[in-house]
Amino acid sequence: MLTRLLHSPIPILTPRMPLVKAACLIIGDEVLNGKITDTNSRFFAQYCYRLGIQLREIATIGDQKDQISSSIKRLSAENDFVITSGGIGPTHDDITYESIANAFNLRCKLDKQCQDRMRRISKPEQRHDAEALKDFYRMATLPSGPEVRSFYVVDELWVPIVGISKKVYILPGIPQLFEKLLNAFEPTLKQLYDVDDRNPHLYERYFIKTRKSESEISAFLRQLQSRCVAVSEEIKIGSYPHYGMNFNTVSILGLKEHHLFLVELVKESIQKLEGTPITAEEEKKILIPGELKNI
Image (cartoon, rainbow, N blue to C red; front, side, top):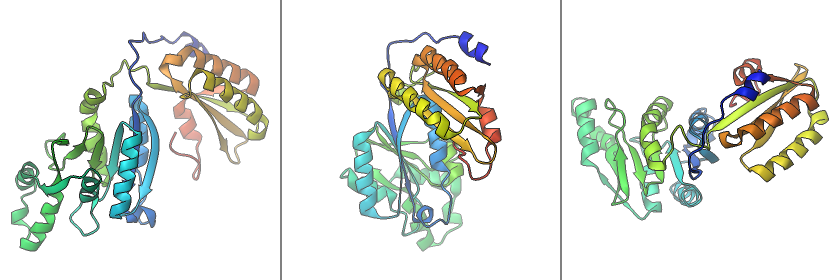
């Protein structure tokens, strides 16, 4: 495998693209009280990793209007691409649209395009009485203003991704919808942020398996990370203990533009740690319940 690493093709770099900084805001009391397990943040982390987007923060908050507004203000001020998940249903605690609208001094109003799609796709008038219909159309009551744009990226779904100020994008919390919409949004995202397969910020990651304990390797890893910072703060050295299996793995993560430097780190780590290189797929296979899954 090391031979393949040393002779793998090095991408020709185009003029440097700006690093896109991202954040994810998970909204819902049911996440905080343990009723449901959040999988959307993990999916979004993998999504960003694949596209070379730097995910800087994942925040989880409850269904509180002031907290939603203040959180989205802060995250949008610090990042280029912010997504939210949850709180856009028909019930009283679904307040994401109005809370985010408030953060940007916008009003919410019934969006005719969204309502028309609802009627065509879901035919709610055939299923709901007047009161239920009113609640149903709460989901089409969207932030409104010149900086608001609704993206309908899946033909068979009426729910949009609501974008505000080309920075904040509001998605549903249901994982199947969240994932489907985000995947379909990818071509639009690449256009909006000038992200494509030539992006020098695309990541590459290497794993090394060693029989040495974390205490035995910690000094070397600390020294290795210090050297990496001088090259790029995007190069991260990590270690993962595999309890009861008598070995650990070391992760070396960086950008494709630093490919040669990363390969040298891998060579040095194999030598110093008396280790062997393994693939990301092999690392996932040796994980046991209770260990880190999001690799």
